[in-house]
Image (cartoon, rainbow, N blue to C red):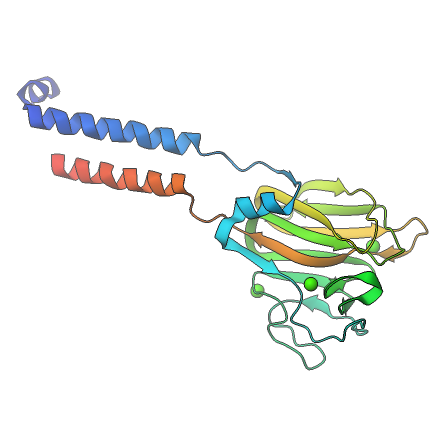
Length: 237
Ligand SMILES: [Ca+2]
Ligand SMILES: [Ca+2]
Ligand SMILES: [Ca+2]
């Protein structure tokens, strides 16, 4: 039977099924093509970060290390991840999903005006993600009375290629400044600063949020339509 004779031999029911399948395919294509692609760029505030990541966000508040209020850990931690044991504390000092390199100290509540526990470095901090994330955000703070200029944040993709180097405005003090970034694949983030006097330091870090998006309603809808399409196709055969 050639195509033409097959077409004219189709009964009304077969024709209706074919039209439904074609309609569903069209809808599925529309849904897939209207899903907004992730663009690379700075995220201006934490609300935007929360909206991007939804319930799939890992939030690291650096509260798991036992350090006295007003005190600071004097021994450099160096590398820090969920497996780190430092000064008899750990593992589990931070959430699994990210590691922090070149950490000099962990500061307690109220240390030089900082409101909660944070980590910092006398040089730089490199955050590396176990698996690439699509968005991250972090609070950056400096000690009261020590505003910090020349703060840079370099964002790298999973292959180690530089996505963007961002110069931050002067960090005024202990009241944190939010920095966030989104990109299709963020592999690591490098934070560094040299103050005006040449003092090598980096901002204190707190409330680090990162992750991949939760399955959105559009993606679920598309998956559902694809399933319906398969069902219609199989019934037709
Ligand atoms: Ca890990
Ligand atoms: Ca904290
Ligand atoms: Ca530095």
